[in-house]
Image 1 (cartoon, rainbow over the protein chains, first blue to last red):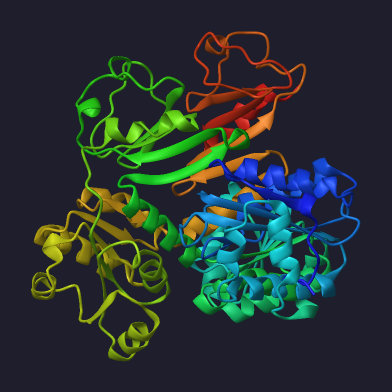
Image 2: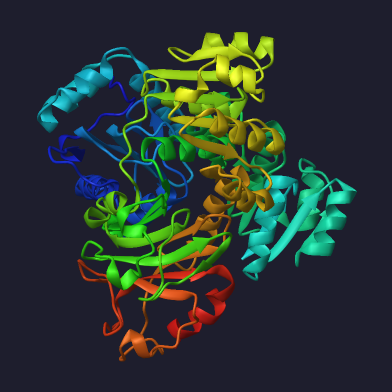
Length: 152
Length: 444
């Protein structure tokens, strides 16, 4: 069982070696998720992600952001993972750069799964040492191993 | 847009006023007769006397057809229930105002559980604004446009070489930066070459993001990094702020005069020192060494106390003073009293809600200050009056300005000879009351 309650595909993982803007980070993650074949309309999905962020940052503090969108352009639940050792300026309520971004794509109407997965990801992030292990990964494959092999 | 707003106390009333200025269909639900009377007298909105949480009343009022529903009473639980009810009844998007730190911490989960689209906390947003102002002295607001490549920075100018009475045409700004708007003593204007920038002005710069970083050096004297910050008032704004900044500065002190609250605060804070004392007396400020503070922030619920304490702190020798001012009418006074910055929770909240409202017509938007100035980013259509002539010849209202043009992946900071072509995205900077007039240039 994965730490996120759902397996993460290597192609949905982005490691940002260079400092990048929040906008570009989100675009990269949207594109990565789209490559896994679960998004029917990438423009609509991308717009929904940005619109949500514009009103209120999904940074939850302690260097983590959980952008999340339920949309009719998503076929099945999937999680994208972005790691930024340099940190992204994310306009969070604790005014700290974000290092881990978990992008949640959920089909509209999947209320029960959605809540369970969201709670699971937040729990994983709070688990001692998990964030550091993720951030020490240098390849998507390593990151996937850490997520998919950690039992919370 | 068909908008329902529940609760029109301070926070709700300010939002209702801004929404009504934009010609939306606004219905305010409120139970207090005095507030209803004030709404009918001052605002162009429909008002209904009723309860925020009565499912039947909300349905009767027409909430199922709402494009946007906002619950902004002073009670977190009522707002959560009310917003969840509205969503259940069929409102398209719902927003709940929530301030208790326990709720704001897990707001993403609460949103998912209750089906609420946005949980927004005026107090948490205010604390964040203050934290940013302390970290980058003089930085009042930032907003991003053009896929993150264009930035707006609003800066409070202090005495500095570039601002000493020189006209704008004599000041060498970094390339790709323009001065969009100057606010002075509560009035704002779009400057021209002969305008001057004075100490105390609030100036809105727009430009390529990297170029804007150098602006602070030009319009702020040298500012050493803050080391000592004093916060007065340990309710939600003060606590939130202290939690954000306590790791960042060597000395953070939090004053509160209530002993019980102080004990609770001490348990929640890590390195900040809690001082159980009234910070509105000169003796207290002197004995607790506020003289050496780089920043003094007054965050109580009482505007008068915040203003008085900030004035006193400045007298005693605090370097910068910041006051939370709940009543927006007081904000211009604050500058005149020598206080460096005023932050208004109800404005922070309303500005976020307005972003949501504007998403209908703009890809990005921002309202700054108390809502006087707006920035909107949108795509320019064919056959609109703005096209095919230099911007200099376009008679936009005096207080409106095309501040940036985005063409493919290029950012253009325009001047008088620049032209806009169909398909470009533009960032329009405008005083709110001139928005309808300015938008005529962008309609076929």
